[in-house]
Image (cartoon, rainbow, N blue to C red):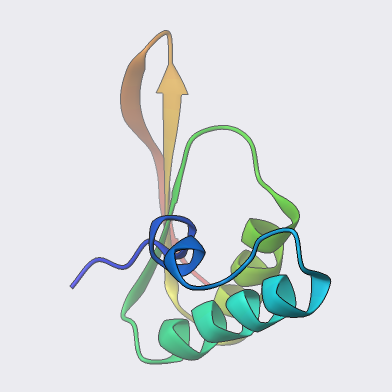
Amino acid sequence: MPYAPHLHNPAFLDEDSTDERKAAIELGIEILKRSDEFWIFGNKLTLGMKQELQAAKSLGKTIKYLEDTNGKITFSSFRRC
């Protein structure tokens, strides 16, 4: 089942609160531990995305990159870390 923390977590966590933002990233990593893959959409990584990406690499998850190229989403690479 797809999970997008940036869409889900703001419903109950305050992004402007340092403590709640940290909790949101920790929640995302806990869910990532139970996931098969980690997908990155777009060309810009936020600090939270970078932390989740590092966790995905550490956990040996399949990472899929999808880039926005002139308004078209394309798979740029697939790799298992």
